[in-house]
Structures are given as C-alpha cells and as structure tokens.
Image 1 (cartoon, rainbow, N blue to C red):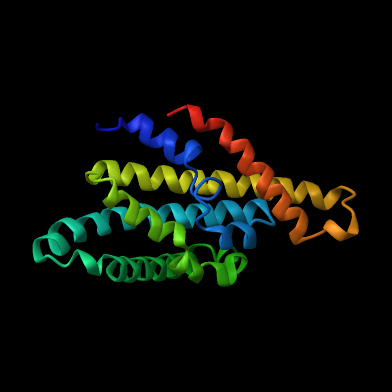
Image 2 (image 1 turned 135 degrees about the horizontal axis):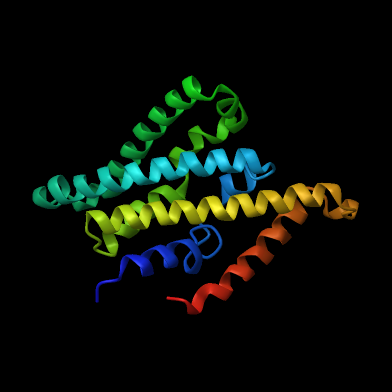
Length: 192
C-alpha cells in the first residue's frame, strides 16, 4: 500500500516525530533548545541537510549501491554524504549569518552525527519510497524536528522566568518538559 503525500507529511511531523516519538536527535534537541532563535536556526540547518541528504542518499542507493550489490555499505556512504553536506552548510552559514554560526557553535558540526539525519536516510530506503516521497518524508521529518525544538525552546525560555525549585533547574526540568511534550505528541497517533 502506497502512502499519500499528506499521510507522509502528517505522519513525519506529528505521529512519528523524529525526536518525540522515535527519540532520534536528542542531543541537539536538548543542547540547542535553550533559545527560540537558536532552535529555529538549527531547525533550518537540519531541514536543509535532511532535504539534500534525501536526494543524494536515494540517488546513491538506487544508482550505485543496488546495481553494484553493495547495499551493506549504505550506512558508511550515508554518513559520508551527511558529513559533506554539513560542511557545506557550515561554510554557507559562516558567510551568510555569522551570528547564527556562532550561536550554533559546536552543535552545527554535530549535525553530522545527528542520528535523526542518518535515521531518516535509512528509513526512507527501508520504506521503499521513491525520490519524491523520500524528499517529502525528509523535509516533513525535519519540520517536525524543528517544530519540536522551537516549542521546547519556548517552554524552556518561559521556565527561566518562572519559579522553578532549585533542585529542578536546568537539565532536570528540561527532561521533565521533554517527556511531557512527547506525551502531548502521542495524542496525534490516531491521525495516520
């Protein structure tokens, strides 16, 4: 059964949110989500990398790995593709938006090891999506990642202004908030 593009989009953003349902990409989710502006920048960078990764990874899988019978090289090849794309994003951000480049700091190169990006590349192949479905899935997944990060960052900014008990300040309240946000997203599970 072939999924409609609407089902792919809704499923990737809400139902199977890469961070809140599949628990991939937790490191940047927790590390970069202290400010909304930084979260939006990271979300945009991840969206760009995931979209390009979908196109390149699908093409490599279909035109190189499968014809040569070396599908077992998939993970290594996809990691190399992601690393190259992240380097490109880093160079562009350094030129276009030095302030965002500085704000993302160490987390920008960590997109290379963001398991969400690699997970999406592998999942689109496992789901046997065509090129357009792969692109749609990866962009929707990245949008879901960005939405979760921005919502989480907004909540964290608000919590800094509220009277949180000293024992819960910082990471403890962030983890509790992430868990509640994940449970809230579970309410979308009946949509697709």
